[in-house]
Image (cartoon, rainbow, N blue to C red; front, side, top):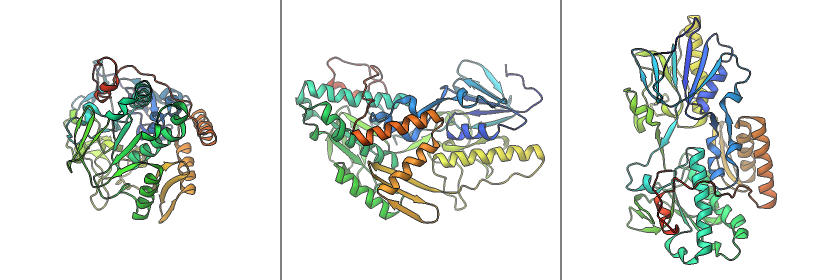
Length: 439
């Protein structure tokens, strides 16, 4: 049965990402019961997942318990659970454990999942980077590959130390830069008998440039920096098939590699497919200008799940600032309902975009046409990410880790932690067969 609702309206939020957290915080003084549901009891700072995967940070440094964030918010409640659907007639959220939670307002902020675009073998043999588990699996795999090659250098010939990163957006660029830095600055010292210089990072991008959302000058700078640092960049190239130890391209070329990191795109969270609502491109859910669901004025969708668009009809980018601004807008609409004021349309204010290539190198494009590259952009990137991290302790730990890494060229998180969920592409490097599971 649906949980009973008292005199105050219950606002149920699904997802503890940037949008869900921002909405819950914005409603801290609202005369309502705010209930946040997530399958994890923590919020993950996804922009730094690649640093966990490349041994720059520990997982707990970019995550914070949800309950800990809201200690001082009396109207907030948290429910650990996986949402599987919604009973629209009964206005109840359905959980995997069979429970039902009633709502007066429902805000879906479940985020996004990896889009493999139907490429054969990509999901089965590749690593994605959407969760702490993903990052830990990849980190353990990277370190395990070097250990295996140290034991048997002949594995180099089968691509044991070739790492293919698919997607030349910010995630792919940042991942490629971090990998090459890890190999050259850190693992070279860990494995003095190993020809670490033979480790390869291959970045594959289907368009003619990396960082396609940036200005041409920023894109050219990023490409130059990647190549200068040793990343092999393949432009105008697409992955068409992935086998356990080979990546095949549209041009007919192929690369022997035992590691494929898929950073080529995202689609709406699988929950979107289970709701019976109208979907737009990449599975995103259609919304009204005020971010509510058509014919369901008490249901809103924000963040990567929402198919909201600008004045020209272009879908908003699936970025944290969009989710956060959307959350604040929804809070205003709920207040408007309470006071009898009319609702308003959501307008996204683009304050800029950033991406880092590695030590002392980044690109930043801010509102007002401000563009910068190099060390200044890198400092701006560091400051912004520290500012957005949840929790002072996390901010301090990350700052200390970054400072230590910068001064010593060392990383403390080079641990092989997981022994399960290893993708198929490392079979050759393993002494015995392993079960296959997508990361």
